[in-house]
Amino acid sequence: MKIVFLDTKTVGTPPNLDQLKKLGEVTFYPSTRPDQTEERIKDADIVITNKVVLNDEMLSKYSDQLKMIAIAATGMNNVDMDAAEKYGVAVKNVAGYATHSVAQSTFAMLFRLMQDLDYYDVFIKSGDYTESEIFTNTDITFHELRGKLFGIIGLGTIGQKVAQIAEAFDAEVVYYSTSGKNTDQPYKRLELDEMMETSDVVSIHAPFNENTDNLIAYEQIKKMKSSAILINTGRGRIVNEADLAKAIDEGLIAGAALDVFENEPMEKENPLLRVKNSERLLLTPHITWSSVEARTELIDGVYANIKEFLDRRHLKASRQ
Image 1 (tube, rainbow, N blue to C red):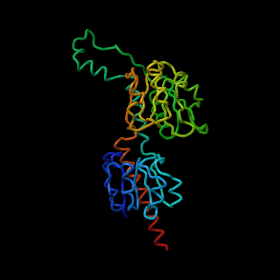
Image 2: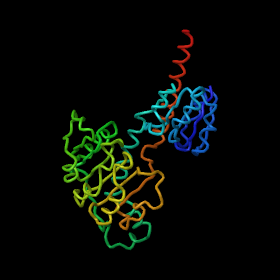
Image 3: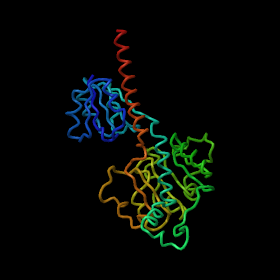
Image 4: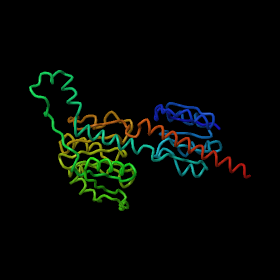
């Protein structure tokens, strides 16, 4: 069984990557450009991809050989699912591996904006503390999360974990359902405008779809408290980047943190890279999902998906 992993660089070096070799003859490619994809998949029985696109044209050419696409991620938008079904190519993703990683990272981002420990670290290491007349420093202020209204957009598995952590800090959790169907929750459900107007923190954990495309634009940000913080670890294009840059420079909110963007990697002309009030804006390169534990669990999931597929094929063949 020939297996090709097209973009191992996207998952780094999890300690269990080599276990995939137990499943067959595996070729690992750190990355694959669009013009390299066909050459690399043409003899493969199974293709593993995180972000490399597999479209109808490719699947139609190699469907006689290709038996399965194992997606090393939750999102499946890089594979033409209709074409895969048409040509009888199985597709399987991995879900649930990044819940704890994203939740932890959400609060790391939040506290970086709420309580800038770097400032105090520099204050001491620069020697200024040794010259101080008092034992402390209150030049910049911070507030407690206790008693604050913590708004969550998208109360799925990750959103629920974030809600539990927020409650541990004695924040009051409210949520907005992007589908309008998620109503059976232990938290108060608000409409979007009310959430934006009343929340001290708005944290986005929703998928990208027709309900969330450009969901948070200038008009929504303008409704927020001037002391509020906006966080997006969900998907790019949920937050309008140009509008957020404008709002940050106008001082409409206290801060924002984004881990996902409309184009990844970001384009050089992205307005977020030209924000004047850059201390109010924290940007990370789509890393909140990627703890060592999460990436290890992801590879375990890819392995399990392929093994299950192969076991079913062997069982079917033995019955014939």
